[in-house]
Length: 300
Image (cartoon, rainbow, N blue to C red; front, top):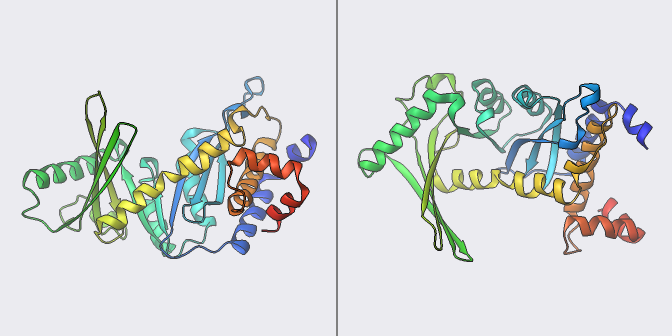
């Protein structure tokens, strides 16, 4: 097994994975596709001067499956991996979400050219854009939105002495936005205000800002923003806890890239098998012990 995966062409294996996903799963219109990167920490080989691989994955939030991935050997290369990954995917009618690293004009244009929409997190790497959006919403809040058309939606969650209120604000009033024409398809800006109260602790308030090609509907954009974080909870966390990815010391040849793809294949299959109501680790054990269940997973 070690020799096979070390020598297997990772690009061809990834291409086969992509073809399998396309032929097996169908994405619903309006589905949120979250794109984010994760480092396999154990894949570094200091003796050979090889850095740990980073996998940039596209995660279909409703279907709960990996649509595709691109591997790089440097964290900074994620920005070049995103366009490559987008080129591989069929995204018509989907909403693509990215963190601040993906907030690039070329990426926004590529998403629109794929007949999809985007919600992009705006932070320090687009400092002027972030400052403009922040100043606008600061003014609008102070003015109580009396001079602008806006949409607002609120969510409240709480348990075990913790309360979180999320307020989403969106507006299509963006004619003032610097370099607006450079962001293809942009229709709205958004702000999320998160107020957290933990029993016995000080209440915290934080705000984050977004640029979107969607109409200024706070509930729709808010759902997309919330759905983006399923890539952390339903993919990255599961890979670490259910598959032990960060503990894997497979480092030779093409094996790290190929095993990353193999884990995505296994995760997709196990996520689609709904009859067993247990965690990913238990599902893997069941598939290893019970050939009937293994066949059920493979033929699902």
